Every structure is written in C-alpha cells, then in structure tokens.
Image 1 (cartoon, rainbow, N blue to C red):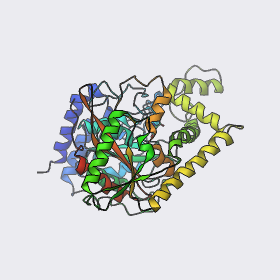
Image 2: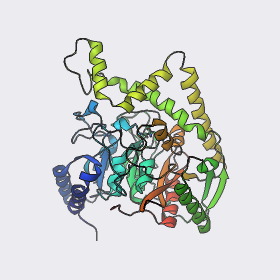
Image 3: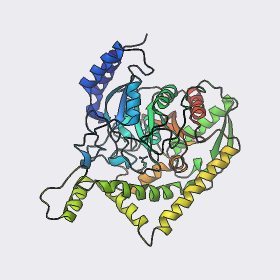
Image 4: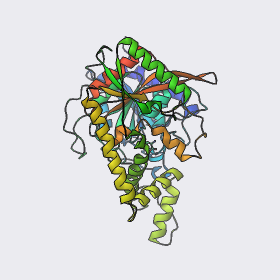
Length: 468
Ligand code: GLN
C-alpha cells in the first residue's frame, strides 16, 4: 500500500529527529513547511513524485530557509529564488524536508571542511561520509529522506554515494540546469541525485533534466526518460575495465570487493573487456588546476559588498575586501583561491592552465575512443578506499585529492557517471560500503542507469538503511 505524502514526510521528520543530532547531515530542517506541502500534495492531483521526501545540498538555492554553502561567508544568505532543479522537483510533487551539509562551497571529499561541523557516516559515526555532498549521502543512507540532490564537480555526488552505500548519479554536462547552483567550477559543475535504488535515481534525474533558458549551458534535449533500460538483462552488456582500476592507490579491501563484483558480473553474462585510458592517471592533476582556476574567478564575487559577510570597523576598501574574505572563507577555500590565482597568473598561465586543458582534451578523447569500440561503460571502483576516519586525512590535502582518482575523468570529459553499491568491506568489525563506478557516453544516461541496475541486482548491496 502506498503511503500518503503526510505519512512519508512525518516518517522522514521522525528519522531526522532521531539521528540528525549525531550525524549532522541536515543544516536546516523545514518541518512546518514540509508538513504543509505534504497536505497540499495529498489534496491535489496525482503527480509523478507525489510525497517523495527530498533533501537539498546547501549550495543549491531554495527560497525556503537559507543557502549557506556551509560557509561563514553565506551564513545568513537567503535566496530570492529556487534553483530550476528544486522548482521541477516541487512541481512533480516531491517534498523538500531540509538542506544538507557539505564541504564549504563544495570543495572537499570528506564533509569535514564545513563551517558548521562535519557530517558523520551512518554506517560508522567515527568515519566521514565522503564529500562534498556528504550530508545528502548520509541523509539518504540513514533513511532520513527518500532521495537528495547534490552537486558534482569532480566526484562530489559519486564518492559520498560510494562511501555511504547509496546510488549517486552525475549526468552529462548540460543535462541538468545549473541555474540556482552556487558556482564552484562552472565548466565541471552538475547537479546530481542520491537514492537508495537505481530506479528512484533514474526517475528523479528525469524530472530535473531538460532545457532551461536560465542556464546558457543547458542542452536542448528532451530525451529525459532514463528508466527504459532498468530491466535490461546482463547478457549483451559490455563494460571496459581500465588498468588504472587496479592502481596501487586502491586499498586491499576495496580491491577485493571490486574483483568479486567483476567475477559476479562475468558469471551473470556481462562481458568485461580490459581497456586503457592512457591519460586517466593525470586526471587529478589536471582537475586541481582547472577547478581552482574557475573557483578563483567565481568566488571573486564574495567581496563584502555585493554578497555575504561584510567585515565591520574597517578603515579602507582594501581592508574591507581582505577582512571580509579572510573571515568568511575557511582554509580549504582560501587554498583553492590561491592555487587558482597562481595557475592563471601571467608567466604561469601557459605552463599550468593551458597544459591542464590539453590533458583534459586527451582524457575526453580516451573515453571517446573506448565508446567508439562498442563499450557500454567504463567500470572502476568509485574511490580508492572505504570511508576513512574523521580527522584522518585533514592535515594532508593531497591525500584527500587522491579520493577523486576515479571520478574526475567524467567531469573533465563532461560525461555521465554513476556510483552503485557493490558490496561491503569489513573494517574493525564494521561493514563499510564499497561502490562500483560507471562512466558512459554523453547523453547515455538511460543506458548507464540500465548498466548500474544490472550491478544492483547482481550484487544485491543496494537499498539497505544504515543503522549503525
Ligand atoms: N573532491 C573534489 C574537490 O574537492 C570534488 C568536489 C566536488 O565535486 N564538488 O574539489
């Protein structure tokens, strides 16, 4: 029997009430608004996502509440509009229950770079949920809501999905409007979806996809039903496994789950082909030039005058800029702005930025060549290891950047990617989820979700609520 929207929202608010104190997945909960909205949904016509409870990453604008980007800079910022993705979810009958925690301005892989404290992993609260969309991933994994939106610039939907044992999909660049997504690196940013099943992820992605005149990079494509291949058989599916899927950075427990997944897929009739993506290993290096370069430009708008925090008692305009930005931005954001300013500065621009763009093009060509051979998707682990301890990598930015090894390629090449639960590693007596990661050809979300659903059925690791 299906539940009413009022019942679903109440169930969601109950779990949030019970678990958010420990997990810190939500920065704001819209109790009264969500309950009122649910009553309207129940009273109205039948809608495709009627009563589905949704959490929104707090770098996506909502008229309700604040949009903080987990930053002191925007601590009190209230958006006058909804992001297009948010508007479309509500029009489809979904109910927004709150805004979720993230690494400040979506820069990070652990959700520890939040000005409002880290989010904890619902499978083991001493560990990180991944990032930057860690709050959204933890909320869905803990059953605090049905689905959530995140943003993915280098892996921020797929990596936390992997570490929290949920499905996370980043669409082709241009598939989902970025209107209302606070810009980090505009040529890489896409809004993506977290869910406890491939079917839910595909449905929700379909609702938020499609052209939007308010985002000049949104594609004119109406092929937004991604559910058509969810029931496809494993036979006839061809996945390419690049040699770097077995990179030395991959931990033994992740490698074990990955190999077991490959074996089970083969046994079920999927054909696995060894492939090379010759430039993939340089993805992280290129990403950490391109993304900070764009960030340094995008974040220039936070000057203490037009948006956000404004320092008090300053003597000059320069001091206003300096103090507002020093007080408003945390260390990781400042590091990215400095990196980005450096790689764009005269004398370094060609050596760093232009070279990184060359690598970016090569990475795209590598994927194109693989798909031209008839390979349906590229299979790797989602990230090199299961969830790590809170604080463990905080003093070592490079260790955190390596988390993005398998995910940045899809952003650099503009391709769709999905993380689907592949199994569990047992670490100190705890079960920790491990994700399988697929990258597909541009505009191939329907096929990609079909391939992910094959892994979901064969591995049976999807859909569990984390209750540790
Ligand atoms: N971990 C990457 C970073 O820190 C990716 C972040 C993202 O996708 N928003 O930049």
